[in-house]
Length: 162
Image (cartoon, rainbow, N blue to C red):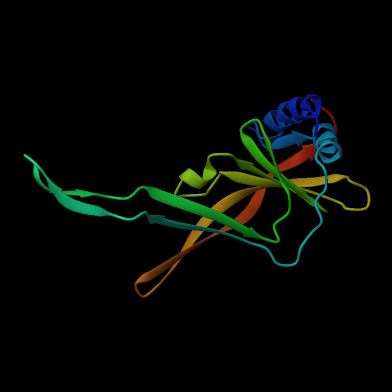
């Protein structure tokens, strides 16, 4: 994507995710045109490994015993994930039939409710259907909790910009 396309996409994204119960179908069509489509994959996985580097322990003259903790590190990895585009404050992923819009800082939040949404559309006609909002739920079994995100209806499309 060139810089003009990114600027236009950012403005369209801001209008699409603004408060309200409707979105402009013209904006949605334009976003579908602007964001390149990534091939859809049946299975993809994203993960993160975090840890701390080696510790140092010793004796410092005039201070006594000292211990230095190693630096924290994070390693992100992805397997077979579609290409994402960073546009403004959003991470956008376009696969056939849907565009996933996620706030760039959403992974810093514990609760993912409202941090992302989906714009769904007909693959054949590129006609926008609806926008769905992320809602996190937690399932607790004995002493373990599993959180998952599902998408619920959020906005309906209207023919043109009000």
